[in-house]
Length: 296
Image (cartoon, rainbow, N blue to C red):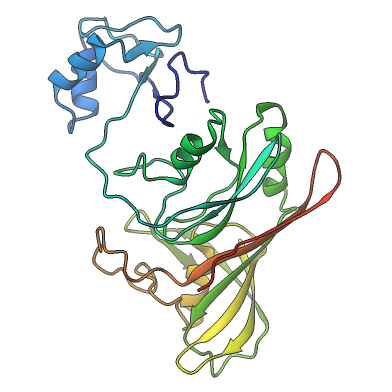
């Protein structure tokens, strides 16, 4: 469960936290060195000396602090230098409870792996000063479009429940090969499960747990422009469904097969856009509609 942090947000970055698991380490430093092998012990010692590793009460932890299972510790991540992502997000709407952003391709929504400052969340925190900003839903790093954030803790649960109860209408657009033998529109359903490598999903036999409505917007010379309406929210659902129909989204490096990692190559964005989100506001009952200003 999330914890209230005793460390402040610094340059838009909130501290990370970790519950200490069952184990038999003599002190905190030895645990951290084993848990995070990419971070050497001297770095942890320096962080502790600066007061950047603390317990839930804000008390400074030292290298020789005895290891105690169940304790929650807070610290700041220090990833290697990040390659700047040269595409800018825009803020579509902001009020006292929510903020709606238009995310570019390649920008992750939240810090993960090698991305920290070059994420939508941290960029928006720096831009707005809203320390409690939290995404209500997610988009893949490769997908552009509308993302809704909450910055009011008291109303956050009400907005999160909209997505949990499928009370949000989401519309995507994609460019993909022309489906000459498909009668569109159609509704595609399948059972999606986790796959290998860990970042992929796959279809399996059994009761469907994912559903997408697919419509043709325009047939173009070398491909077609599609409207996709996911009725469920499985990871990579649209990418998996389009690939299963034989029309994988252009520049998809995961489906139907995994391509070599392109690293910092930003030349071929996935042709998938979260175009619109609509819902009835759970607090005032007003209809809400937000649309991306981007194009594929």
